[in-house]
Length: 134
Image (cartoon, rainbow, N blue to C red):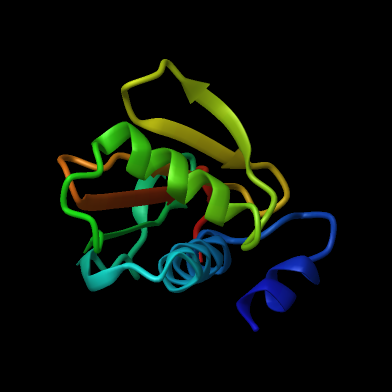
């Protein structure tokens, strides 16, 4: 539902609150699509972080566990990257290999970072661009 609300925002684009809800939806759907275990929200977002000039951004983050505890962080990030394609169209903004993968969606003004911290542990965080405060 949040996706529909943001897509109808007109030419001005989404507010920080609207993009924040989309970000939350994308990360939540990514976790569901990936069938990960023990999802924990580590940053529930929901508040404007000032960027200056009347603009703000929002954040959201989650961690989870993989059923195969020996899968390395790079493999976990790659797995999430594949699953994200069924959630929303993100482009790779930065991927230096064996490091976090930064993804961006220009339409929704969101960035997702896949940063699995260790074997068998998923980590995903995101933020919106600096947008008109809500």
